[in-house]
Image (tube, rainbow over all chains, first blue to last red):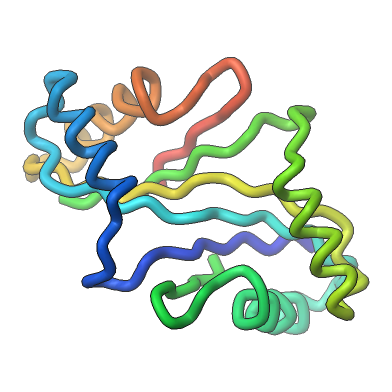
Length: 77
Length: 77
């Protein structure tokens, strides 16, 4: 099955990329945009039919590779 | 309100970054991972209380800045 997950910067961690996007949007007449935060999105195809097992494997992958837990959070969708 | 959206590569567009992640996962004992696709995730704070208007503005932002529609799709969550 296909597991979808997102990795985002924790609240309070500076996001210069998001800030740059926000400023660009403000300059493009989207002047009501007050904040942009950018994260990563992953779709992982796991050869495992059990949804629970696939999700717990995805959680392991986040902890070991996909997310830096010092500054990032992950969420399995 | 806060609009969340993802931008992904279209099916068929090569994703070398996803491929590299897949190979790394395979080498870390996650050998049942057959495909990884990576995309971008955005959280945009729009000063607009109407949900419909905020979402249609987010769609405009995707078309004009956030997504390259030649090779990418966007989805507003």
